[in-house]
Length: 192
Image (cartoon, rainbow, N blue to C red; front, side, top):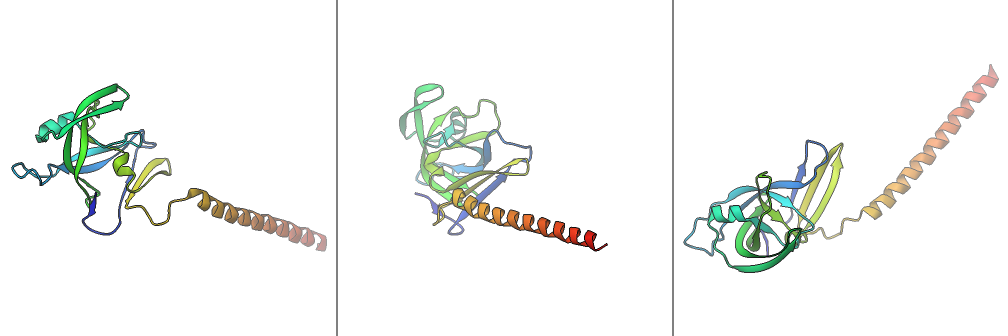
């Protein structure tokens, strides 16, 4: 499982300053787990692509080779390019500089053909451990991830119902104010 290194809850917030994002990419750190005692355990910084369509987390083949990750097995994967048999590896994943997913099993794959600096694809095996949200801040895409889940689920429907009632009350009050102001103006005109 995962463990927390700083506090009970940890959160990540990222905003794309260039308008609507086509993908959610955040910084991440990975390293060879401490169980491999004869290898280096320095953290390596890379980009992480968050993919709700991926069942499991994937490390790029190129990065796995650069780090000299030991192969722990094989896995059959199915994706947009069909079925493949790929190597599996164990890595430590550090997100938000505070949440460590130690000795996490990942498969190796080609995840960054455009060389955008993405070495890790975060799949639902990690995403499902927290609360994941995409929203907008003005014209920019904003992404937030909180781990572990909040005790109360995020429920936009209930929030909208509360907001809808509030909006309705404000609208009624505004209509009442306009009607009152119109009546006051009519009375003033009659007095003249």
